[in-house]
Amino acid sequence: MNQPFHVLAVCTGNLCRSPLIESLWETRADAKGGMPMVCASAGTRAVDGAAMDPLAAAELRRLGGDPSGLTSRDLRESDLAWADLVVTATREHRSHVLTMSPEHLHRAFTLTELAALLPRADGDSVGALVRDAARKRGTLAGLGADDLDLPDPIGRTQEVHAAVADRIDAAVESIVASPLDEK
Image (cartoon, rainbow, N blue to C red):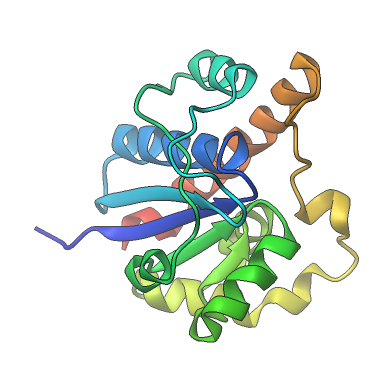
């Protein structure tokens, strides 16, 4: 059996966006089959052990995920060493990851950036697809913060949480449906 591909999702507090990515990625990838993937999450300013935000947890349940057992963790260098791919909520989170681990330059993307790039990527392995996606970042010219960054829903309305969760789910669906999961 293939070794699992390790994906790390990163946001600020690891209370809303990154646990949504983690759970939905695993749920969608498991349902599709294909390459075994393991997804974990962490936050750039997280307090270890906090429960998932209740509104984000409600959105996760709505989308078919399970928030039980998801607790916040602060991002550590060991998390990055474990990760084959890092997906972040924003470009600022991506910059934080690259400050901690410059060697992730070609393996760190915002979630929505990766979803936009993978359909354009070529390669005969997951690593090759991810590297080619990184090389094609320039093809996304014209996309700005509203396109590449997921807004932080913490402390905001259920409607904001739902909109962010739906964007995350659409991006994860697109990635899992891409050739990434087939290699």
